[in-house]
Each structure stands twice: as structure tokens, then as C-alpha cells.
Length: 166
Image (cartoon, rainbow, N blue to C red; front, side, top):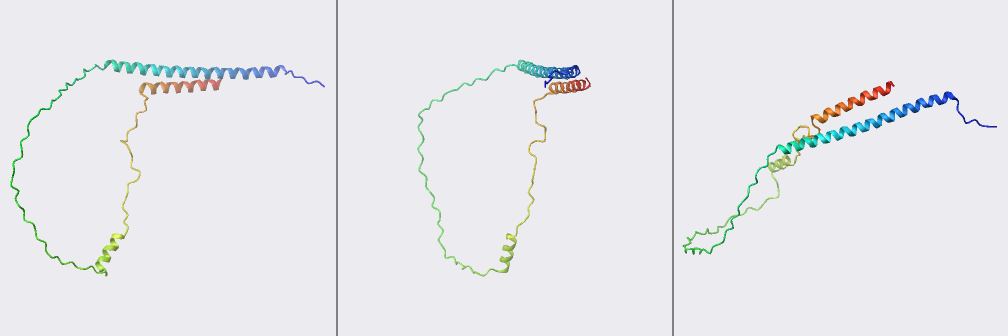
């Protein structure tokens, strides 16, 4: 009993078509990666050129120099304080103040005041107040970068549609 490992000619033609599609897709994806890297490089170069132009437009301002003058202490005599008469202030004399002893029985007014003070009150507390000024923070993408990203995404859309139709 022998086993035939050879495939018929019909099978070879179908597999080569599948391999051809795989190679086309692999080359297309590699091309997209290269195109994306070139786009990123272009954005970085343009940003670098723009910052260099902005730095060139700034005119250097002369820095102010401060002249420090050191003060030399001089020995100047201080005037002596003149003796002044201190007026005598009258001292109040202590008086006998009567002290009332506290009672242990609270009055009804005291009980009513204590009951209203102990009752919990519901005070509204603001919850979830927004922080910040309400503006969208700067993301670092300018107008040119956003246009490049948009064109890149549209290009990916067209390329993927062409690949599906092929």
C-alpha cells in the first residue's frame, strides 16, 4: 500500500492565487507603515522648522545689570534718652461682687432652646462642581497636523476599499 503525496494540478493553481493575495496584502501593509513613518517624520520636521522661525523672530533684549553699592556702617552716636516723669495712674479698688449659685432645675425656655439647637439641619452641599475654566486643553495638534491626519485616514480608507475589491 503506497501513499501518494503529490497534489493534483487543480489544487496548485488555487493555492498560488491565495499566496498572491497574501503577498499583495503584506506589501500593502508594509507600504502603509512606511507611509505613516514618513508622515510622522514630515510633521516633526515641519514643527522643528516652525519653532526655529519663531526663535529667529524674537529679538534678543539686553539684560539689565544691577550695580550693587555696599553700604559701609558708620559709627554714629545715639542720643541718650531724656528722663521723663511717669504719670501715676489711679488703681481701681476691688469691690465685693455677689455670686449667685447655679440651680440644677432647667426652665422650660432652656429646654426649648436646647432642643432646637440639637436638632440636625439639612444644609445643601454642592456636589460635582466642575473644575477648570471649561475650555478644551491644548493637545499639541495644530491645524496642519490635523489636516495631515485626516488625509492619512482618508488614504487608508481608499486603499482598504481597493484591496477588498481586488
